[in-house]
Image (cartoon, rainbow, N blue to C red; front, side, top):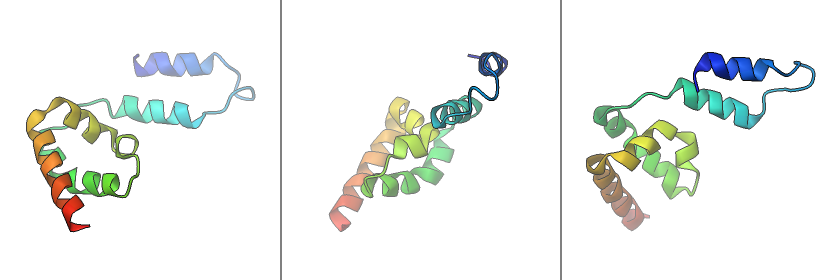
Length: 91
């Protein structure tokens, strides 16, 4: 969905009848961030992503672009899995 279409869809309801829900906000954020991150950006954030996972928080929700990249890039995913293994052994 294009951003303009999203706003048109949202605008079909009167403001008083509908407020932005958390889901609406997350959908908008994901839409605005719907760009590919490259391996270097993932490498710079992978430690933070792994720490979130180790704390049993929802890293995929908190860092959706990193999650998406890890789902599609086997090289970065291998590094991530290795980092998780090391962190699990340390804790």
